[in-house]
Length: 477
Ligand SMILES: O=C(O)CCC(=O)C(=O)O
Ligand SMILES: [Fe+2]
Image (tube, rainbow, N blue to C red):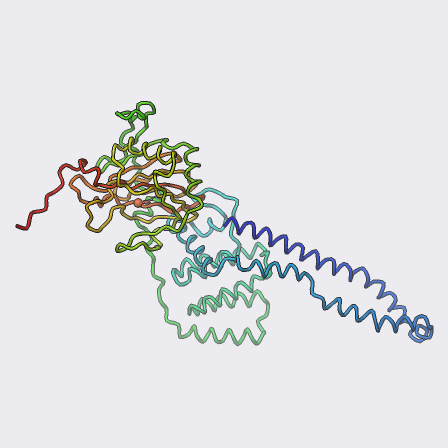
């Protein structure tokens, strides 16, 4: 996206120098035409007299032979070819239709999870906060087209916004302010998806605006749509259920519970005696806690520096295989805790904080979520039979997220807002060794900003003493 901002600025410069070249050509013409016209007018007034003068006659002949051929070349020479070439070269960097599709999907996801209205989004209002941002008729039109197959009611809302916008504004695109053109496109989109009667209504609006109701092409198109609409099977748009308990948490709509208790953790390790840690207990069984201010800004910068060049689309494990999934949209990279002094220091701090042995734990996984990035509700433990499951998770928030990006635990009704330097810790496995399904959790989509976290999954084996009463399977014998 950063590159696209720069590219758009370059395109504007390019278009501007294209305009300069056009203007230079135009100015040249404008400056010579009046003189030419004056001379020609004079000749026309008294043609005989004019051509009987040898000087006039010679000059006329020469002009007609030479000058007008030059003007012909002048007219034929294309203007701004270098700017056209620049554009053609840069084309490869432009987003594809698949990219646009993904962008629509992201906006739709944010709309659903945060219950944003089309009107608010169009005007740059996100969760009641006004931003210096807005959508134009073509933006809302693209959303309508994307949604038409998924949710016709919502698609209609976006299309309506398109039409409303055009009543008051002008598009800064080659299609200009032609409201009827957009309405015709809209009608065509509806036709493509066989919504004939709505298409007819929109088509009529377009024709009315164009003031062209007698145009035979439009009339014949209209009668085709009318015919189709007669045979249309009326189906009720199905009401979509959009409430999931994960989404309710993302909106901060769980009945608000604050931490059960806050305390300073200052037990044995020397580090903690020097720097006590504020610990907030959110849930006692299983233990879910927030450690406050446990990473410094310098440490966060250091971690980001290590991770940034290596970030890659995050995967999820499905049937033992790593795959890309819509469930998890982020970029991340694994960093060995032994990587350098910084990561070693953080590793030591984690083990001091949580009193667990980190041997055999996974490396740090540093993650960046972009706009709309999320990790839907999931469990961290492995489903498969393993004798070394993920006993606990520690998750560090590396930045404050302007809006969205909370971590939610639907079962506990807990929404944890990212706060730079804080860490969230919980157990995934119960004392008896079984996985704890109450630990279902997810990372909500980022609405404004980006979200950086890093996690470490702490394994069972080196911490077996933590579950002294593991159930014994009855022996077969
Ligand atoms: O991003 C979050 O808040 C949750 C991340 C998470 O659950 C995970 O990485 O396993
Ligand atoms: Fe997780």
